Length: 122
Image (cartoon, rainbow, N blue to C red):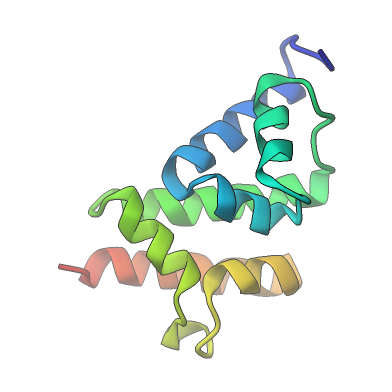
């Protein structure tokens, strides 16, 4: 086991666990650039070293967006939103934008798009 104590590692594992519940292991693996879903499971169970802080920052934004959508819709809808082209994001999928763009430049836009979707979805 890598480190099952409290503190930053526990917070990171909680973050990954919640995001995995909302978006699924495959999307979390994509967002983190993990080589496979087993790596994500290893982060949660403490058998694999956690990703670096830049990746965790990306996951915090993803979790915030997923929670906004989750206030009105199911995890399946949030998963679809993350993977689908989004007109509010220049027709890029939110997951791709989170993975490839500078977080400081897309954070507000992604969260606004998630809020807009959650507010106007039926």
